Image (cartoon, rainbow, N blue to C red; front, side):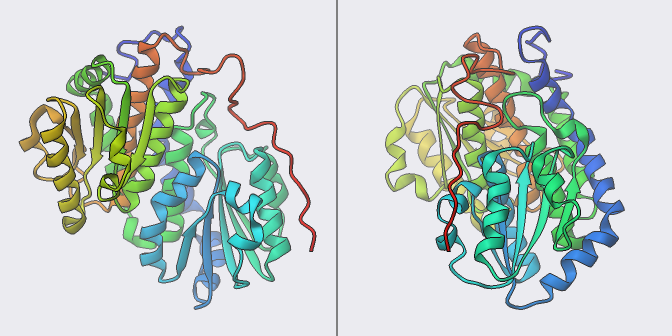
Length: 385
């Protein structure tokens, strides 16, 4: 397939979603250029903070934007040598004193597609209210959003704007998620990730141009699963969570989707499985972690009907799994935090195909408005000292 629209026409209510999946490789190259052009100002903002041994870094956002933080947290903690936590804005707003229980110098990294969700601005304001010292790195896709505008001129804030096209017009975040995650990795991870954007872009272009991928994703959706499970470990735990959310969103909740870690799945969540389930296991590139992914894949293949378990893998054993292994070409050895950005395209394609199979309009799977593209209906309550 040359694009994920192989079985879709652009007038079936999926035009934005299709375009936003396909455009990711081009946007990642643009993100790479944006971060490179901003390197001097980014380093002037970040380096003095990271040099402080008592710094805490908090990665925050809501929904998909929160999962960006979950993907990034393990890698950034290692690279920065500082405490790094991924905490959703929805948790920060509901319990700011609990989430900011330690009054230590904090770098709050906020991810926001629009920057207009109620919790986005509230989380930064509450951090300022509760903590004695907080600095803000705002990564957003919308220059006109409230979050970007309010932090644009603040002395303790730095706003990093994503390409305008990453401000997804479709219902579900796709290119906005991957662009913001990549930007944070490049901005905070340093030279260790030089050149990674190009490798990721080439991998996704290979996936989107592959007729084999079109057939395998189509075959999984054609099974008519009632439930789909995504498993991943380390940074791929956040990827699994984002994958499940994409399926729930684009199918309007008609296809149950859950996520877990490869080890955690046996501790109760495995009860979700029945003979109409499919499982996608994201295989870690870390040789140690990968052993646990291999174990659960083999176990589930012994328990479920043939073809019910697929692996997404860049490793050398991918070909051994035949049609049940979906490749990530050219990414063998890439850290899992980066691997996640190419791997998520498979989940986006599953969600898109599953939406189509149910006769839904992927750009707006909730036409009655019970779930909104930009969250509505949130009442923000004042926090009294």
